[in-house]
Amino acid sequence: MKIPKINIKQFGYVAASLVVMSLFLTFAHNAYGQMASSHWKIQSDSVNFGGVRSSSGNFTIEDTAGEIATGISTSTHYIMGAGYQQMQVIYISVTAAPDVTLSPALGGLTGGTSNGSTTFIVTTDDPAGYTATIQASSSPALRTAYDSFADYVPGGAVPDFTFTNAATSSSFAFSPEGADITASYKDNGSAPCGTGSQDTALACWNGLSTSPKTILIRTSDNQPSGTQTTLEFRAASGSSHVQTNGTYIATTTVTVIAL
Image (cartoon, rainbow, N blue to C red; front, side, top):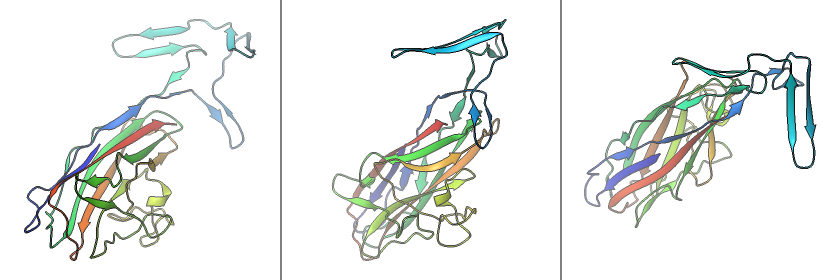
């Protein structure tokens, strides 16, 4: 996911606004039909008259006896894996997030704040759910060869409920919104973040990093409609800060993995 592109003019306003181009990577993950309680979990079971797990220092093998009509069957409309050893293959998909233009344009000398957002939908039949992280390819994330916007740094251990930028600096931040955001991005309608179950719009801001940051987690399936997540982005330059002329680009990756 590329985030973003912005042109800064020293003696005027931004000629081109911030552009976000998004590419989401989806990873397949195998899981199985499960029975579970608060104390145990059985990944799969089989009704037959035989079967055992055998192992040595170099191998492990499971076998069953007594099953019939096992194997892979397919048609134009379905694929079925019958039998204990076939088990279930988990499905997960992510829609492509559209490009985003942040606005209004920023002045290199006068500063200002630009906002924009993009959305994507994650759908999975995994009963254990999924998790998603966001990661920048450089630090700071938003930069040119000559200058950059600092990665936003919250004032504490959790994201800031309110975005703040000093008059003498510039910064770039993000905030995820949606039903599957992690607890640290939730709130109770006011500061601090990480202390409630609400999802206040344009709240709980964090900075990008070259290390992945978890933004979404779900512990159940959500087929067939999936869950939409919005990624809000904000770039700000203070009124006493001079931002060098140029095209600023950040590249990030959002990784979604079935649990």
